Image 1 (tube, rainbow, N blue to C red):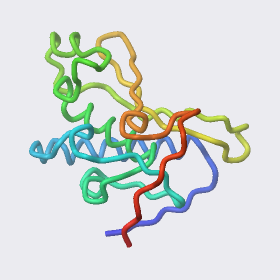
Image 2: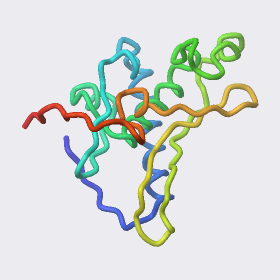
Image 3: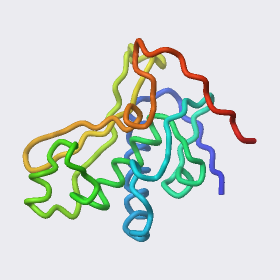
Length: 160
């Protein structure tokens, strides 16, 4: 099913919706423990012309997303799978394992250069807490987003 939502420019509303999507992704991941984690699923970062936010199942089927959808997927995974969603390379891994966390508080965080009156350049990442410490994860960077100064890459052909 395809549902379109048109929003007036409001960064806080967009972040609330992305965090709602993260909670929906957590519900999906709890119901389907057989689904792969975001970083092992073969999903890649791809910039979008028009914003389309997918739930976890549609993200897997599509095979790509941009920063907002990837952040909502990763936050949902941390909410649903806790320490099992972390690897040794992730901040808080040892503490999360030691504490036996079955859920990790996580949220989509918007980084922006907007002046607050009009859309600017933005980027979504994940903020998560293990114990009393907050960590950040950038799924787009981990899944192929070019970083400033990177040479341009040819985008794979888009399927119709």
